[in-house]
Amino acid sequence: MKVNKKNLQTNDKAISYTHIEMGSKTICFMFSGSGYNYDKPLFYYATMVMLQNKIDIVHIHYSYGEYFLKKSLEEVSKTMMDDINPVISEVLKNGQYNETIFLGKSLGTIPIANDLMKRNEFSNSKMILLTPLLKFDSIFDSILNSEHQGLLIIGDKDPHFNLNQIDQLSSSNLKIEVVQNANHHLDIGEFETTNSILALSRVMEKLQEAI
Image (tube, rainbow, N blue to C red; front, side, top):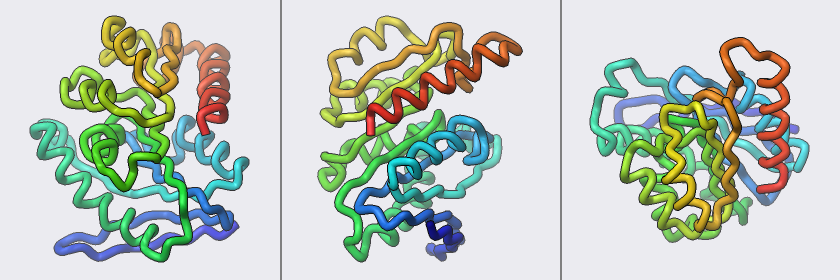
């Protein structure tokens, strides 16, 4: 296993990313949430699941201030894609990968739903959406109209959870998993440690099945 931390210089910004290589033909690009980074449980164990399956991984290290989340969804999506696109292009340019997986949590589901799901070159990619921001109509509509295989996981105590929307999404190609009593971090209750760990284990089982 090779772990390389790299920097890419775009027009006015340096974007850093970590490329974990197992010698695979499949690559999983991961997009963190706002304040929910790659050392947090969902990403830590999702990374472990990918490595267990000999899948290469890219963690893209973007970070945005609080003001950022007050912008329009279009602006947020464009800014994120300006950071993400150069990394995807750089990693894919030499053609060593023939399969791609995109995995995002919360904020990280915006570029997947608003951009990557709509691109022909990724029409066969698997999409893993953890706690997507379904309150935004464009995100919900994009997921609903997508033909991608993959997985969507959300807790029924997440502010973005809506049973009617989940019922509609069950007709998509994505496997839908609703975690009972789970919040936006997919933790159970306020401090239910054991139940939260059991829920995390279930999420990773579903991820294993999806990939």
